[in-house]
Length: 387
Ligand SMILES: *Cc1c(COP(=O)(O)O)cnc(C)c1O
Image (cartoon, rainbow, N blue to C red; front, side):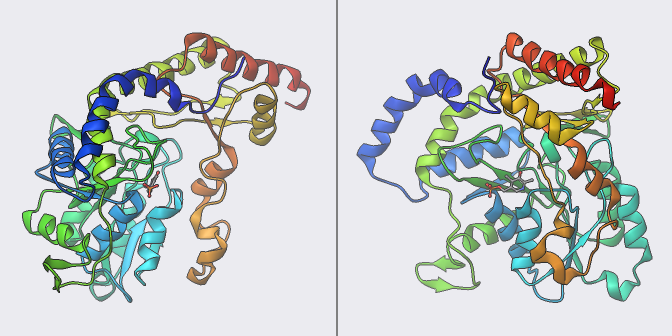
């Protein structure tokens, strides 16, 4: 049996009947830059996330970069995030000449440890703290970071929060007895429409949400080279627009998102149930859903004993898996100048050694899930001599 990590062709079959006629209409118009398609998607995403404003941008990476630019982050400034995330989170900070400051993750949710965040902020002198221009919690794998204590820190020290929700469109977190969506907590929420995300386009795309009308206006300006009106520039911006073509595709796909999310959640629950049933929890630690959290499983990531050998064994039996991420960012060659060393963030380093993402895409069948679990069971049975 073949079980790829992700197969987008099955999904395409679902919506191509709706998409193709609209695509023809769109092509007849030849209106590719901004305009009604982008605006319609911005409204739809803002409403979906429960945030007043949304601004379509080139990618999740540019969403992060533009949010930091809107806050005026630059050389001498510091921005706090975790070292266990996709490169873009930290790359955006460093590209602006600011210094990334890392806080380790919680070992069971892989999101930033809010207790350590508070300790770090408390330990700064007011003069040092003034340099911290933002906190970027990453809603990793599709689960929100622990936003309540993070927002408490943000308020106490008046430091804005930028949510990296690239993997978490539709994820929820209960605050003040209300289930709120990812992107509705911070000054900015950053989304990615990269094809492998829960809502993907046909290439690169991204979105920034914000509750602040002035910031929304500034972002709209920054994504067109800081232009306020034709060829007059108040800021130095970038070419950072979402393509109208991608916005059209995303409008067609958005109505399916809830169903796809439910399927991801069912697949995740099946895996977790079967690992328990098969007595595999000694070798495989399934992901933990934080209480009051609605996980959207962009990735179903387990901790696996003898991870690399298991990955190879699965590959040889037609099962695609991935390691997100094999080397934490504080140990990357390009961040050597930050002066971190191995052992500085033990939970991130341990996760990098032990975690493995299994196929969880919406169209996965029960048979495929059973095959994956059974193959994992055979691996540990065969190797039991080592344990
Ligand atoms: C995908 C991703 C990004 C970047 O998104 P792109 O659209 O690929 O630029 C940023 N942060 C995280 C956590 C991601 O997973």
